[in-house]
Length: 210
Image (cartoon, rainbow, N blue to C red; front, side, top):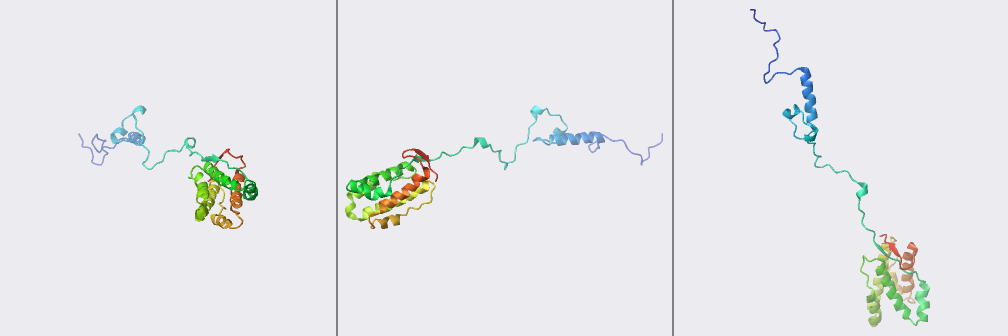
């Protein structure tokens, strides 16, 4: 028998480094890419057919954020309070105090503190304390002035709670104490700005804006 020439092509062997047929190689490549979509794929599992129910999908990346659901957003509750009463500033300053021999001034001072406490319950507003200062510490002169100054700051806080620009100045109110007692007229005018911004009757529940 004649020997096979060395230049003749040799048939493929089943060795380790044997090159598979072109069709088979294409099938392997397709199978490996399909299996690579699942976690835990390798060269061995790429050649096997894994049923869909046993295939393990890839987990999302660590930094990936889950899709947000707009319908599941929980909004914080809106703070509410009771609307204050609108009063005539001139009547508060001069009319009713003259009729009641000055008693109404104390009644008014108590009522505005009670209304401010009910309007914004988030802040601690004293109700009876300011009135007691005027009644029992009026002889000290200093204590009533401090109380009136603090009242101006409380009115400014109530204006902020209503979403308004705070225009009430405690310093101006303190100075008006020495000008015909106009502090009550000034403070009531500033409180009326809150009442007018809502336009609701006294005692009606309203939403705070600030």
